[in-house]
Image (cartoon, rainbow, N blue to C red; front, side, top):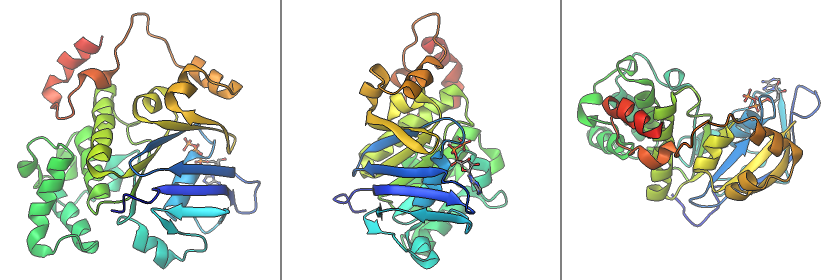
Length: 289
Ligand SMILES: Nc1ncnc2c1ncn2[C@@H]1O[C@H](COP(=O)(O)OP(=O)(O)OP(=O)(O)O)[C@@H](O)[C@H]1O
């Protein structure tokens, strides 16, 4: 991984599908090395389109224009599918919302991680199992050695997302794009996965572009945030500042739409250790309440 280059630097990004009006317009975003930047906005505001464009995964019907498109330190303007596939999974990788659909249901998870390691030349066949185990430890998989032999359906939702994250970080990417990675998980597990992403960022120095519709989640994880509304960034700044003192009416409306608890609640991140196993979840929840 290259820690000196920006994980992401795009300027003037616009995306239009099939000749329709642009779904994303004039978006500029920078993710420095080791930085976690959030993109927030309601459904249809263009967040996933940006995430997919950063991976070269938009359909052929999409037209992408930008005055700058540097992904993991590489200029991807005019990149071919071959260029993108050389980047994906190696220097830039992505985690989606639904872990089950990202995994092969018929393959043990150790073999899935080992396959990625071999494809990206990180480990040969002989080393792959040991390295897969190291990566499962890196993502704080409880009882990792045993779980190497599990199929995805034998894991909980949070454990599956840990495997997906393991596969995404296996080759040491400069950029990780996470598109609603915790939305499908319950709140306790969600906090554990957020903490894991932060720990991995600290340990590896990768930059993270974190997409969410949930301002609470963005506030817990991100250093900076860009607020999207109808395809445009309407506000951007340090997450603390944007949450405490929103300038744009849409950001204010987003903040007001967060349900306020009737009793003070401490951030779950403050009380849930990252390697917390699921047996402890009810006790931890009690503490959060
Ligand atoms: N493959 C596609 N073909 C045509 N239009 C698309 C396609 N993908 C997205 N769009 C349109 O682009 C706009 C932005 O969609 P996008 O999925 O990027 O938003 P989003 O903020 O990620 O929403 P969500 O949170 O619901 O995923 C929407 O109007 C959507 O209909």
